[in-house]
Image (cartoon, rainbow, N blue to C red; front, top):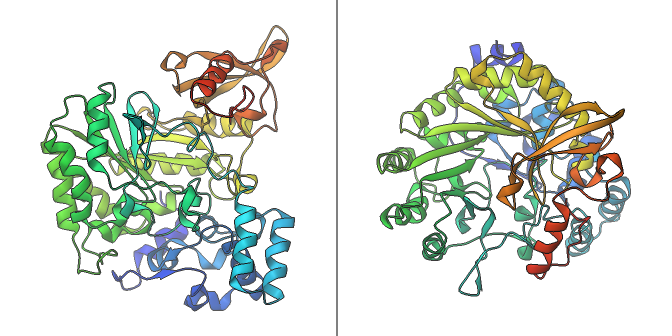
Length: 470
């Protein structure tokens, strides 16, 4: 069943509008529903929004957020800055500047200094994941796992709305040296030709589907025309299904303000499928309410009709979805709509992780209880998983070995493929929220992968250390 409040909302929806309107710091007070929000809460949004990215839109505001439950509503927390997303001393510094009437340059300087303290690029995204070709670093690409290359199209480095937990938040706050973006599809093709072990290319961002179909085709069609025998799958990571489903239904094209190009976009998806390549739409849904609106369900159907497969993923987030019932509802509804549950992630150690994080042991308990209450078709989901520096590490559970309580873990993906599916044990710690906080069980000095990870750092001229496996 849908959540009752949402079901009622959509049984008699407001007149649907397909004209996109963005809200950010400069105009969020114009949102009609904001009239009922306290001035203190508006000030919190302003303070935190000067440090962490903030953008929402009229679909999110009108159809996803339950304004009668603000500020506790999970979809409000998902898209609007909250006071506790900043540490108290960071909040006080920015708030003090705003109250004192400081100019924008002074506020920006303080905000940038705070941002650099929030681990803006976790898991070695800048230091360890950038590939090179013929001695040239390929900015705008990442290659961490043997079979998969990430590509960041330069025109896809924003989103229809920003998630408040986003681990790629530096893309959106004006720190140009912290951005990933690339226009060089020719270099991507050359890299794939030189690396036949790569089978998958993931277009990511930002959101690649912020682009027009024409511009997206400029990246995808050359891959198809290059006749790369090793390239088997093209993935597109997007939140558009939830935040702007009209992208697939004839809504306003944000990039060039044309009437719409949804038919061209779906034709491009169909072209990929008909070429013999598998097209995977990596959809981000963080709460079952995002699946309730009729336009979302209609958009899902249209994408599936192109031959694309929709896989769904989300981090486990305190204040948003940290209850088993939420995941049970979400996985069931996704399968009902023809999507494949793929990952439950752990909130990454960046940005406002202190606000969103769930201890690893509790995360496993939530996953386990939800997993127990869904049918086999929902159990394609994997998790809870940390995308840490060594790789994707799954929490398998808690047990007792030789009288010692331990946390069982394993790699789903690893910098070294030989690490994959190798179990390892950590000392039990019910408060740990990330891999770097865990210690090996039984008094061991290091986890099995750490010596090799240090070797990797040395070979890549990095400044990493064996304990630096966040």
